[in-house]
Length: 203
Image 1: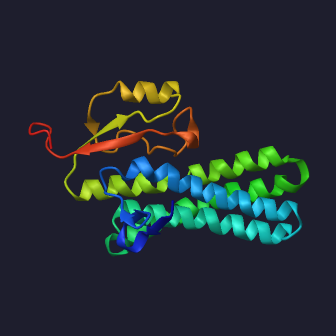
Image 2 (image 1 turned 45 degrees about the horizontal axis):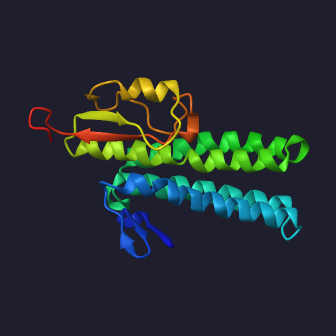
């Protein structure tokens, strides 16, 4: 299965076919899993001595940064939809993640096992979904959507997500973005948000 992300056109393709906006979130995790696979590949090259620590850090940083940028553009509706505020928001996301990653690198080569390394890299890839949902919420607001609903995904759900799922339709922006760390499951959240325009008409 071949994944192609065209963030400038806000398109996610699977084997050459465009994934529609209404089902894109269902495939989001498969795209993120592909990023994780690339990170693990870089770690394997480090373990065999094919690349050194500095090269590995450069590769891993580029992978998570590219994932954040691509998924933000995908959620926002492409580069043409990006405003100055969007670029500032994206820059802020990258800066906050970069600080976490720098701390991670400081501990990596002194006290972290291979299993811990794989786990932490997975979390960084998982957290990129928050860029998609944050941008999507902004896009929906601009398109006239006024309410959102928290929907459970296919996972063992934490108490936070179960509580959110019991909530009715709420004003858009009421819920956090899946994967932004505001649920007990943190970056591993597999839930998604739904949006509607006119509650009386069911839009």
